[in-house]
Length: 176
Image (cartoon, rainbow, N blue to C red; front, side):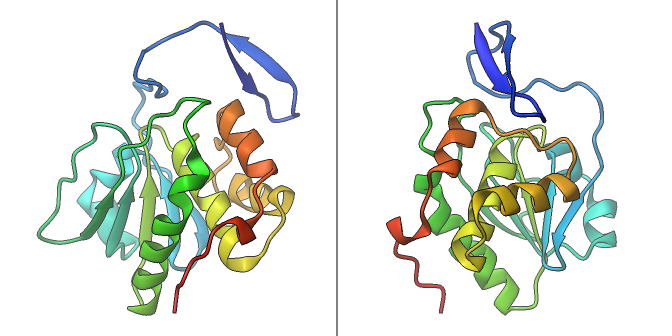
């Protein structure tokens, strides 16, 4: 059995699903969460809809899904990190390079869409970590802000625990 943390912080048991560790979601999800004017959060569906990307002026895409293609390499700047949505994946080890990419896009007055498969665990975890690392927000506040922007945000139990105990001082990130 797998476990996940519900919105109220309770642990729920789930049946074990795909070995790839991502949330299988067959519904089209074109909802984008506005975390900051330069930072959006969503699913692979949103990342593959050029009309939506243009509407939100997306110039950069941070793809943290496993096995999801970047469809518009001639029109957008991509960074791809194939991260497995498994509780034992060290999500904090990716925060520095993701934060640098987001920062570089922001410096160019770009808009970044961070996405994974369903826009629920990996991408939300990266954005929570980004806020902790770059703005010095404590976990609870960063989580609250991301959850407000994208209500479906639900980091897997391992990511949740890693981010709760994450101290940005652990990583030396040169953004400037």
